[in-house]
Image 1 (cartoon, helix red, strand yellow):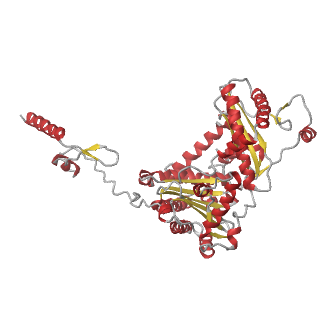
Image 2: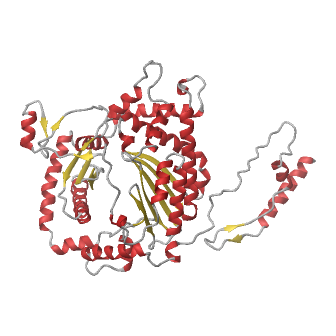
Image 3: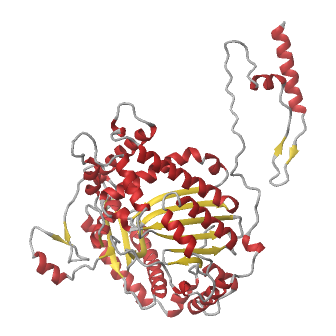
Length: 538
């Protein structure tokens, strides 16, 4: 009888659900309905269960990263700041020079460079208020600059350990932030440590403070870890994570020779054209290096903390930041203050210096005439000049045992790794481009040139010759110095890299012919069709 009554009640409840009216939400027309929780559900959630049964009760609490301010800075303050007025006029002249008659206000605002809102000898903060997309989102990037992270393979590995473990801890800490549409990243580069937060403008400072607070706690935990903690039988969570990252890095370096051919080609061309760049085997040897006792690795938690603390305590530490999107100057200054408060726990000297010397800059201040911070003097990646063919022959001598490149006869080709299971071959060819007196103009010309080259190479090598999907031409600077164009080609259609190189050599002849046949009108049309500024969301 009890079962029959329960079944009847369930049927009656189901019938009520069917008859319940549906509402329509106003934005997307989605159908929905509401009905109260049953007394049975309430009883179970209160933990009032039968003996022997357990109830899982989860109370996530409020998400403090949710947004209730969707105002857009570009709409509320459409007028330009005094420092922006000067940048606007300079950008308009540049756009007019590139596209005569095309310097509309909208075009110039998109192309306009960020302007400086704070500066001193040790820091520089840039702001780019969005007046194009007009969405309530923004991004803050802060780069702590110092060469001490790239003094040796050990110091750079310490930086990588610190950032990788930090990101792992932030995954749990900032789960609510990701649900609320916010993002973050922390990375180690050759020039220092890079922090980035993004998302709704209202919460940028909140997530930035959380990232820096967790970074400080992690550094303290590493510094206070007892010697050999990462090798103890009863390991802490931090020690276990450190060992996991160490094994992951060693695995990557052991399998380095099995990377994709295009990846290996890119690695070796970097080693060839840049000075002071550490090799994969140097990182591997450092991770395997043992201390004087031979009982534990030389690079442990304490050593990582020591290297990271040395970076933050460096007398030459500098700060450069960029804030962009729906962010006005007041909110940008607030973000800077939040960052300075956060790093005051790591680097009180830099934080104090910036607060003392980093007053808001006004038009006419001499510091605004400095385009960027002074370059790092030590251990900066430098571009190298390759020898001419005749000089190379004199240095290494001709030998029938050596294979010489048809495109670059000054380079000696040597097999550095073999992977019998790999069916693809790859080549990367780098051309150094002429650099004029005006850096930005040279960049614009180089960008257009490489865009033309990419279109031609893709059509010829990929579409017509069917050599493979991995065909690209990219443009940039070697070590932030000389201009370069790099063609990358990976394919299984030909037996070896030399055969691919021959196809590239023939393409260069074809591309030159295409350029010679282009008239001025065609080139101008191509330039006008090229975006004059970044078109991505903040």
